[in-house]
Length: 106
Length: 125
Image (cartoon, rainbow over all chains, first blue to last red; front, side, top):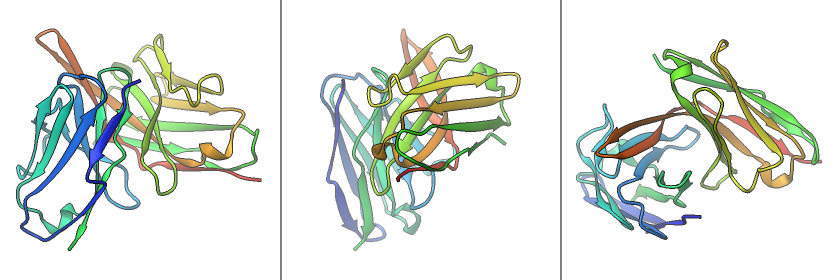
């Protein structure tokens, strides 16, 4: 089974900050990597698919990069509505999610 | 608009059974693979099972294999999860999600979008 890790597990940031979250796979998964945002009490929402493609309707301040085993989600200028938990997910071999990264207010 | 609505959650004793349903609308249900994904209270996301558009291909996570059964009724635009031999560790919000994908250059990528609002399953005596 493919294991996913994320770092950091949580971070505190201010509005306007550039935020970077890292996701690592236990084996190469090419670009089979997606990112989701989840707010408390809500279902996850797709942000990025296939490692770097921005889902329609998602603000352009979100971007994804990477391939193989190492991936990054970047928020270029953090907005109040971006405080949430972010999950990566691989679709190379069935599906596995990372443990999540909680972004809260500094 | 595309919508998924889960139902059927509730409180059940260990060893008991429960059947979850997911009603789909706003898209051609029979064209899409579908998945169940769960989230234990305060924890992360765990994929549970998926089913192909025709129902001919099914996969389960090891944690539920032999106890859970996924199915679908394309005529009713509905997805189901029959859960038997429930354990305390099955306590979670269960989401259904549409499996969306595309193929390019010999590679086929897929992701979950959208997700339903979730239904809570609590396994406790």
